[in-house]
Length: 312
Image (cartoon, rainbow, N blue to C red; front, side, top):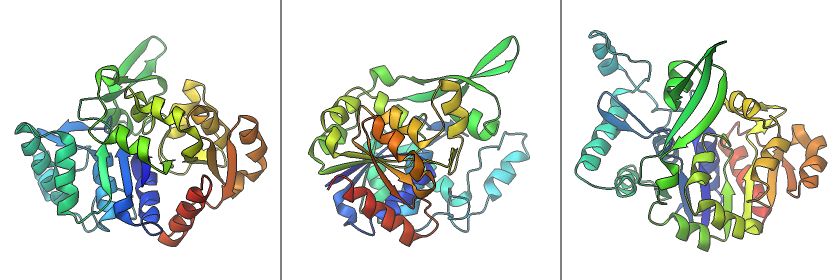
């Protein structure tokens, strides 16, 4: 069995490659839920849905999120009533959120609802939310020389296009959260644990903040391998640099190695960063150099194979 920590588009693409080289039923994906939020009265789980749609072969590969061939008639109609529609929910995507919200209101935990959704999409990989409890990423930003404000993650990232300068990040509710059923078991029993090429601050950080998760990873460090989402000093996709730098994390594969040093023994870095492999090794993390730019499903599969071989 393989366990993965996942969040964001990079993780979804990596997982799609992974299930090309190992049986999907052998993979457990523990997914970030601190990005979850409520829009128009509906509970939305962006990372869970991105992974589900990608593994189902239904995602919009060009933009990296949402469904292929999506339409937005409902949201456009809502705009008539002067309702904020900056978080774009497509007409087909809304069906997932309607179903999830109804099930949650009926008292079904998020982990069980997620299993129902993945079955409906014929996804054989087991997707586990990191917790069934509410954990939310809150980002403190600077509004000017004398004012700061705390924003919900989606407000900062989507609503304000990740433009307000970041001062601090916290995971509200993480200290009280319990790992979702199956999370600690998967991490304990997995032959290999992969930290996907996800934003280390707001995609992987919340998972590590759930009590018990970091401890298990530290205890099994020799079986944990991560893939750097930073290539050539910049994120492949997303705002990782706008979060890492203000928090004192070097925006490089070396910075990623420092973040994960206590919990993983190997880090896969891109060939562009080959000259920095020695710096990664000096931190005590084995550096594996390969092509990490997942320009095609075949390259994603090759990356997954190379990643698994790092701790074989």
